[in-house]
Length: 381
Image (cartoon, helix red, strand yellow):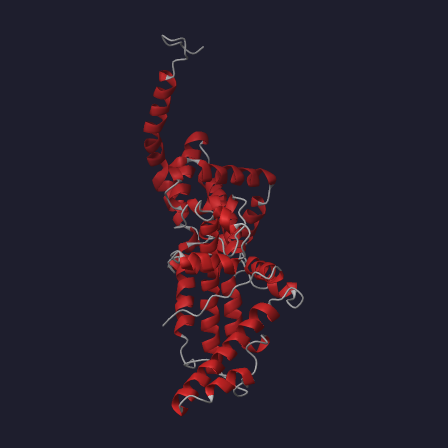
């Protein structure tokens, strides 16, 4: 029975002392097994995680991992990793080594059993990440994964394009983000691209209403303004073909949505097989590169703009006034009030391009259907 303090309350000093002792002993217990566990973990290779090896022993081991008892142990360890404060700011490898040391201390578990267990953990995390980032990570990429990412993998998160919370609802390895940003930079450079909007089939005609006011201008100015109007017409028609026609709810095949895990995978598909996309067909290689770079930048701008509107809509200064307004009117109010844009940081760029393609499609279709789709202007150069 617990002791009572002078005020009749239970005396918690004994419990605090026990917790202190347990905490103080933890590093000692981990150190007792660290060398052996680290040696075991370092002996792992990708074939253990992928299962892509014609090795009878490995196949038998992987079959054991499918047993209900082992899956329960994996689930228990994953729960510990995501909830124990000791692991909040460390990598997956460091957390696993500490936890395996404690498991060995508690039950004198054979090192071979621990090896099977850690393989099961890595395989589980790899599968979860592959479903979120669209590509399965290697063992070298899994080891430095922040444990904080595990909580995102197990949380019931629904990434939404145009939401300011999108970055924190995505899960990925640091190495994958580096590859994403390298791809974004390459697409932005658009080597060999045209310098401006062109149409391979020739200039589209301007309406009489657009042509007539130009007749009174000096010839050089008339030609310059006319070229600008034509480029704007080509630009507008391109974005309409992408967002209204191609992504239209009655046009886009659900199988095409499923084929692209993220927006970035969709952009890469356009880059590698432009002939499969109607809005790229018939264009020169230079114009395809130019249009892809602008499309990628437009997607990022689109996410930034709607995320900014969402933040303003939740602010007490705008909340009530914004309720009856559509997005275009909200943007007009924000512009008049000089509401600042969000910084086009690497984090925002990565979030926009790593958003699930299905979520991006849903975002566009819902807003087009509600007549509330606003395309941001091209950035000023």
